[in-house]
Length: 148
Image (cartoon, rainbow, N blue to C red):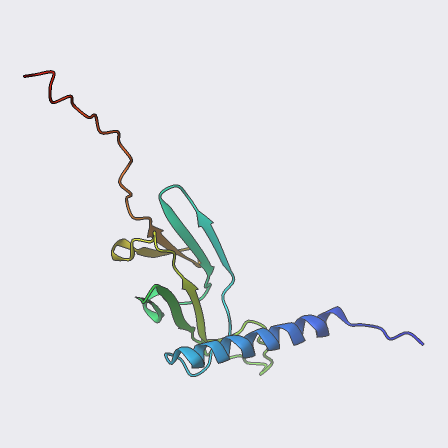
């Protein structure tokens, strides 16, 4: 007899395991006791910067904290539940509320003194510029006897 696998139950299980893992990471970092959700993130490298985009819809920018220490960029914050009165008393919450946490190890080329962040339509955009690198140049060796 074959067993029917419910795709939603697998996704829910994966989500719970991922949230548990992130909660453990957050605890090990010491900054947060537990993260209730994990924002999806895209990271792009351009010639001049690393651009991190994190989905944080419904999160007030004042509830987001970004820290850099020892080459580790940490993003944390909270999506707060908006209490609304429903005359019928029926509610269904599918979006996750509460604390979130992500961390990324920055490369040596990251210019941590000039990191910028903004939100744009529910997306947190963090731009980590690259350090300017001295371009190689050729040094001409003069002949000391030619001018004597």
